[in-house]
Image (cartoon, rainbow, N blue to C red; front, top):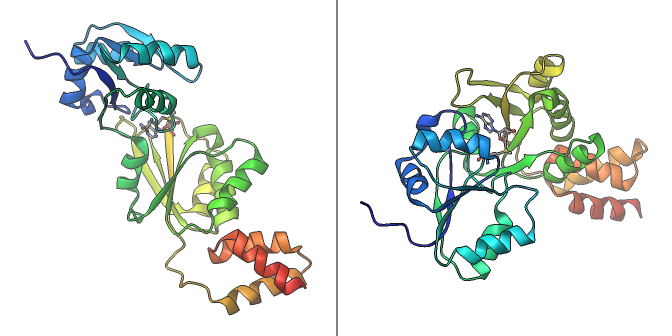
Length: 278
Ligand code: SAM
């Protein structure tokens, strides 16, 4: 019989579609821990059967509160407790951050068992630069907040990775094209599953493709960085701001559009727009 695991919290990544991706270490831990914290027990039941594990489960999800965490943390000194998500890596657009923080504050051991993550899997397929990337999770559903969230990252010189659902894909791609310019992008769908695909193109091409044809399944969008554009000079910035303001845009609007187009920080463009406007 193998030795029981050291007491503490175990963050266990699970497959995002193909059960064969459960790591041997994760399977062993799920068999030998004393409790599994699951987002949805019905989903995790299938995983535990696959791993040959027969251990108690307790629900831990976005509805769990401080009292739930206190009860779990109180057991970590004497028990090995595993946290899993419905799919992929816990804490990545999934619950767990507060639990890890409280377990750490209480001085308990925390172990991570890495494995599948849809964002990373999509990056490996997209054929877009991976040396610098920014994970954005889900964009806000409302149009105005979504445009603001996109404007905030327009100047970031990195690939962007986003989670999205089929029904919102077309609108999100169009909003990304409007806010970031027509960059190269990829739509990675149903990764590790039977219908896995990765469709590439510019944001406008992809927005057109999915405008009236919402795809089924789970989706990651990867957007490439500004295409090899040289760093804009201060003359470029001034010329673009002057043109926008002469066309009637307020300093704030001009700064937002120019910052997105030149790939610079909005605050910097705004300060310069105010100076030029004086
Ligand atoms: N923690 C998970 C991870 O590590 O990837 C992500 C959880 S988040 C609640 C779920 C989202 O991840 C889905 O809406 C989808 O955007 C993305 N996702 C999960 N599985 C996927 C798959 N097999 N293919 C593509 N995207 C997937």
